[in-house]
Length: 219
Ligand code: SAM
Image (cartoon, rainbow, N blue to C red; front, top):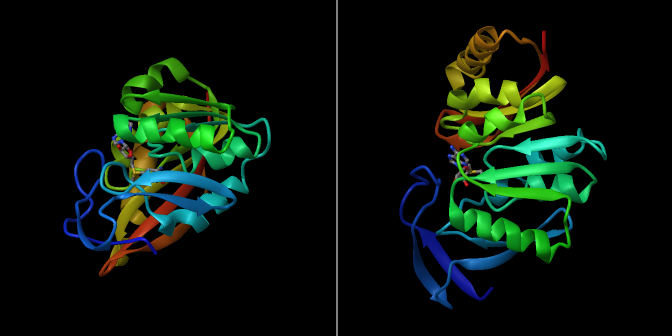
């Protein structure tokens, strides 16, 4: 261990970042994290990253087959997107935070991955250009992903699967977000079927990070 830091703010803001205080060793927030055989350069203060989603990333990676097209709407430094690309998917990965995008590009080179298009900007605004594009759409922005459900359905191909993440309270784990998905489907005219609902991790007392996978059928 070269550095010890401790968080002093919650994860906050549009870029989902937090501040740390230095505790011991070198004063830095940049490190290399290894996950599922890949190396990621992360800057804990400037771009979102958590190792606690590693098991979930592997679950989704195991549903992606070589040749699948994946659209990662909120890709961060690339831990979902680069894992899928490494396994032979064709990936488009978007993030609004320029520093996350720079790190994601560095991480693609670090792992010699080229089957990925990395774009900086608002995934909601980019959706228009990607109608019926993806076999899998990743929506890992759990506090506000519901605002982008219509765009995710638009990006999914007929038969494509959306992987939707949310923060839910234990009294109503899946009810509110199931309703959000159904409302978005109704508004777009797509038919959906729910494939999987699960708890990804505990988030706060009585709150969980959940995932809902649903298949999209286009008229
Ligand atoms: N998927 C990554 C991971 O597992 O580490 C990052 C997830 S992080 C919770 C959400 C990311 O979405 C942040 O990097 C943030 O900058 C980005 N973001 C927020 N709003 C966005 C938007 N409208 N379009 C694209 N990216 C956005």
